[in-house]
Amino acid sequence: MAKTKIVRSGYIGDLSTQVEKGAGEVMKAWKAQAKRPDRIGDVSFRLLELAHDGTELAVRSLTRVEKATQPPVRTAKPAAPAAVAEAAHAAPRPGPAHAPARHAAKTPGSEVTAS
Image (cartoon, rainbow, N blue to C red; front, side, top):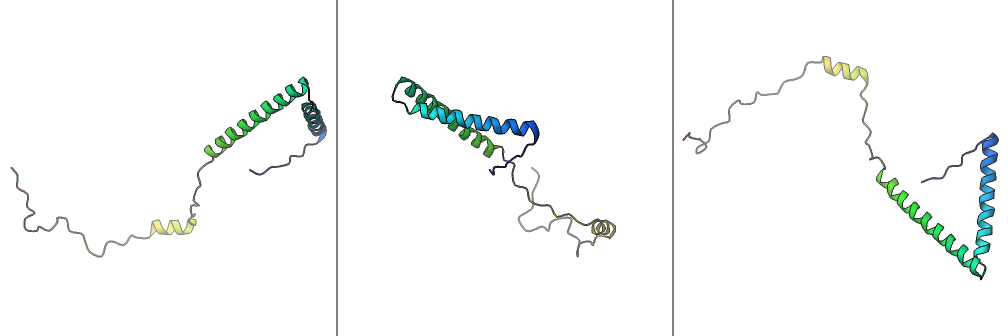
């Protein structure tokens, strides 16, 4: 799926960039804390690991949902011009070259007798 960049103007645009920058700084600090060799580092590392695994699971599930809900491919229907369609309805239809037989020809041994 292609990523799109949405440009927002005004306060919403400023707010979204500030939130994005703030989240980046928080993640940088959290990763730095996870590198510590003490108990705080262990807890931070485990929390990052859990967050990463949960995000990975969510992405995998959403990818499956995206593939399952993709609409089927449709073939293009050729549109007949209005003049051709009207002419086709107005023109007399040609009949068959010969009339089909109403009854099948009898062959020897094909007769059915009523019992």
